Amino acid sequence: SQQGEEDPQALSIQEGENATMNCSYKTSINNLQWYRQNSGRGLVHLILIRSNEREKHSGRLRVTLDTSKKSSSLLITASRAADTASYFCATRDAGGTSYGKLTFGQGTILTVHP
Amino acid sequence: GAGVSQSPSNKVTEKGKDVELRCDPISGHTALYWYRQSLGQGLEFLIYFQGNSAPDKSGLPSDRFSAERTGGSVSTLTIQRTQQEDSAVYLCASSSQSRPQYFGPGTRLTVL
Image (tube, rainbow over all chains, first blue to last red; front, side):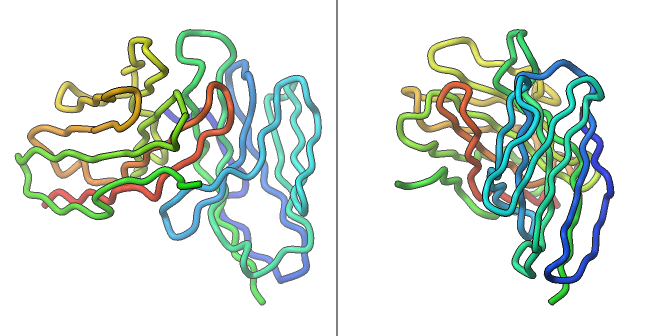
C-alpha cells in the first residue's frame, strides 16, 4: 500500500523558477528519501534525510522534514528543462522487522518549460 | 563502478506462462529489494533480502510470485501462471545496510 501522498500531482513551471513538492506520510520513520524517475524507468536517488534532521541541502536541492506533521518538502531552485521528471518521496519505517523496505508516494510529475 | 543491472529489459509473455526476471546488484551490497510499478498501484514493495536473514516476503501479491537470491548476489523473481494484472515494470534495488537504495533500470513485463 502507498503511504505517502504527494502534492501537487503535477507541476508545470518555467526554466529558472523554483519548484516545490510536498510529501506526507503516516507512520514513524527512520528516514525519508527523494527519488527522481525519467520516462517511467530507472529511479535515481537524490537525497536522504534522517528522522532527527530538519533540513538538508544538495546542490540545487533543499529538503525539509517535519516529523510532528509527518511531512517533507523538496525544493528545486533555478529549475532547468533537464529537471523534467517524476519525483517520489519514500520512507523507511522506524524499527520493525522490515526496516529496509521503502514505501513510496504517488509522485509529482514536474515539467520545466525552456 | 557498475550499477544495478536487470534483464531482460522488456518481456512480453502470454497469460498463463511463467517468467523469470533477473537482478544483478551492486557488488558488495548486502541488501536487495524488488518493487513493481504499475499505473494503478504506483510503486509497491515486493520482497527484501538482507544478508543471510530470512527474506521479507510481505509484499508479494500472491503465491504465484517467488524470489531467490543465490550466493548473496544475483536474484531471480519468478512469476508463475502470469495474469494480465501482472503487467508492470519490475524494479530491483540494492543497498549497503541502511544506505540509500540504488535502483536498476527495470524490466517491463507485458502479459497478453
